[in-house]
Each structure stands twice: as C-alpha cells, then as structure tokens.
Length: 219
Image 1: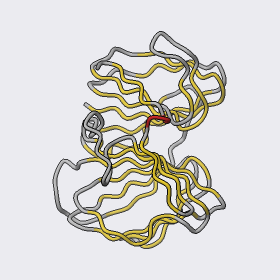
Image 2: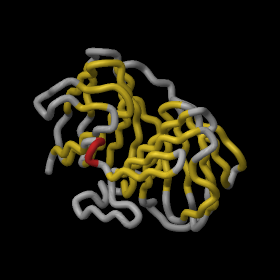
Image 3: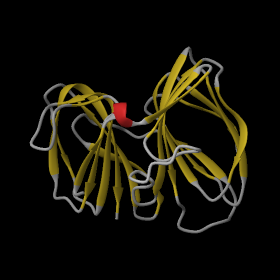
Image 4: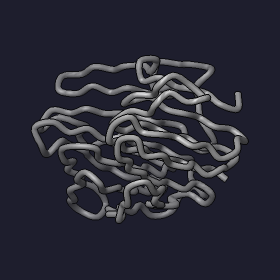
C-alpha cells in the first residue's frame, strides 16, 4: 500500500517486570506476515523501562541499531565502555560480526525507540556513538545515515505547526510524543502511531499539540 497507518494499539505488546515494549514488526515467537520489515528496517520497538530495568548483557551480530531517547535516560555498556543517552540524543551501535552490550534505565522512567537495520556489509568491528543533533521547531533535522540510503531525522513541532515530509521511495514517520491533526490521509495520529509511505509525494503534517516525530527515509 502506498500509505499505511500503523497504530500503536495494533502493535504486539510484550510485558516483563519493569518493562513494557511495543513491537511494530515480527519479533521473537510472534510472527506477523504483514509486518516483517520496511526496507532495511527489521525492528521498530517502543520501550518503557523502570529505573534499573532493561536489557542485561546480550549479544548481537550483523546489525546497525539506532536508539532515540524520548524521556528519562539510558545507560549503555558496550564495546566503547559506558555511555549515557538522554532525551534529544541518538545512539548508533554497529554490532560488526559480534558485540556484547547492555541497556538499563538510568532514571525513574525511561522511554526510548529502537530501530534495527540490516547493514550494507556484514562483519567488521563493533562501534558505538552518541549523537546530539541541533533541533529546530518545524524542521526535519537529519541525525544520522547509519546505513547507506537510510537517513534518520527528527522533527519537533509546536501546536498547529505544519511540517513537510520529503518524498522518498520509503518513509517511516513515527509520532514519538504529541499528536497530529486529522488530514486527508487519516484521522488524528497519536503518540505511538506511524505513517509508512511507499513511493509517495511530499506530505504536509500538522501537530495538534507540541509533538516529536521520528522520520526514516530509505532510498
């Protein structure tokens, strides 16, 4: 479909002590044939953690993992030692042929969105970087291009402010916080909802309240 609306309420929800995760794509033992991947994106998770909870040391291989913190703070331990990721910051983990890392909430309540991408090339050495973009209200600000042709951007909008989402072969727009007004595309979108555009022209989206959008463009 050229335009798909993926409601947060339609995601597969996983509950663990101190953690609530909403999965947008097939994950673990839950298989959804209609939602396996979107371009190189194979995982789009919305995590809510209690302080001290999260994901203890575990392994990954042949992935690029991008994390955006919406609230609280996330403590990361991995190939480059320890790091802290706060709201308005992105973390890019390149797992290489293998990496062991851990992610734990470092605040009373931490919410972050994490995306897994298929890398352009397998193997290599792992790396981890924390990025702090300078965000301007009403603008789509590029944060990183972790995989060639896969661009991650963030847009912050004031109430009633309109944003133009550029055209791309595939575009994923996630409402990290706030809400979008009703448009020709859909009824209002709320926190946790997403647009998936395929070969669509530019679209204008208007915020109903102060909002933060996470935008992926795939060439």
